[in-house]
Length: 124
Ligand code: SF4
Ligand code: SF4
Image (cartoon, rainbow, N blue to C red; front, side, top):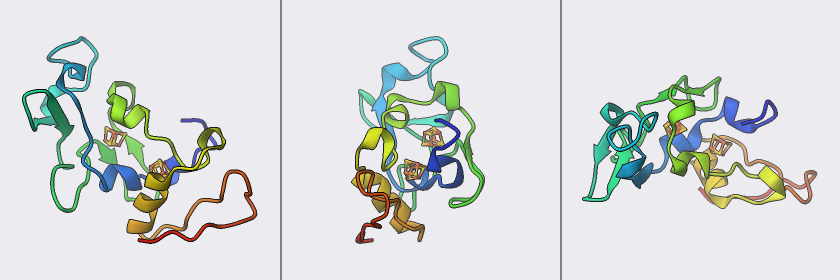
């Protein structure tokens, strides 16, 4: 994340989706991987972050309140699912999943990356 990312005052995606990834990303399989004790095995090949496999997800590693100052407690060891999740506007690209997560938590939509003066309408 850069210092201009909206993520530092959001965290909505960490409390919206099941954050799953190949189990081989955990430190059971590779040194420096996602800490296994913070994960849950959900299939023979998939793990997820604890707290995200439930109707009201919230990753166990999310520190702070959604919409306020937040941080990931395992930022350097986070999974590919976390690393590859783009915020809306990152690289000039739209991210409907980001917008949907923000809407779920009552946060305002981020501007259209191609037309920053236009605020999109997002269904909750
Ligand atoms: S929902 Fe979007 S803005 Fe919020 S933390 Fe996730 S990627 Fe960043
Ligand atoms: S590991 Fe970090 S970035 Fe990934 S969902 Fe949890 S708090 Fe968010």
